[in-house]
Amino acid sequence: MQSEISSVPGSPERANEDWASVVVPASGQGGALVVLDGVTPPVDDDGCVHSVPWFTARLGGALTELSGSRPDLTLAGILSEAIRRTALAHRDTCDLSHVRTPQATVVMARWDAVDVEYLVLSDSVLLLRSPEGAVRAVVDDRLDRLPPGSLASHAITDTTVRNKAGGFYTAAADPSVAAHAVTGRVPAAEVRALVAMTDGATRWTEVFRMGDWADCFAVVDKEGPRGLIARVRELEASPSYAYRWKRHDDATVVRVVVRPDAPRGEAA
Image 1 (cartoon, one colour):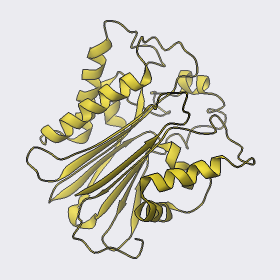
Image 2 (image 1 turned 180 degrees about the vertical axis):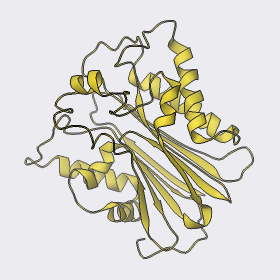
Image 3 (image 1 turned 45 degrees about the horizontal axis):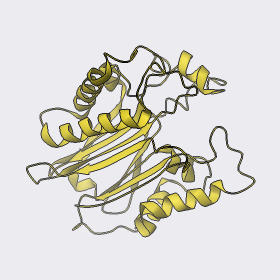
Image 4 (image 1 turned 90 degrees about the vertical axis):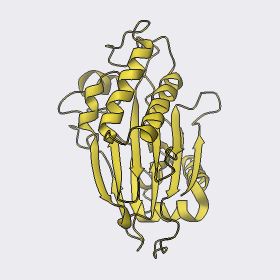
């Protein structure tokens, strides 16, 4: 296994709310990755005395530990347990029922010699590339399917469609949201490499339309995770960029080659 991680805050004045890890299980076989994008509350009141980075670090740490130590649990089961543990860590000091309680989007993947298991919750993205070079994107597109006007502001999003049926889901304090994640498995022989990204990096494809997901994977393959983020920052600096909420967002990219011995496809 080979891995690279790059995570760059959207602003030097604010803490990075993304979180990422790659783990090799105690058995030494296979591995796992975790990528979180903390959700910045639109106002200071979120019912919690802790910061979003506090939350993502604890949720990410629990996800990493469980991914490497509990092969008996599915990724959805791991996410549910990690949310429960994290909620327990601040239930006595914070109002976890608050709609803006600290929360995060989630990308997870776990692999061994048999298969690659994946989980995506909310708007971060996982890309899987085959040995032949074909790229498949695993996305949770519920945000894109919301009624027109639902995303007029973060406040509207939080109070009407966040973590509700017919809306979209994030990892906050309710373990049951894990059941709403996009999950699946593919044979290990069909996956050579993975790229996981928060939406601060997926802008290259989703906002700036510089290429499709295969093109995006090729940039990460050639220039590394930091190269893709640098490209996004250059595009964001354009005076013509009509941004909706943030000119620059925290951006994280994780690249893992799960089968280094597999042939590289044309997309590489």
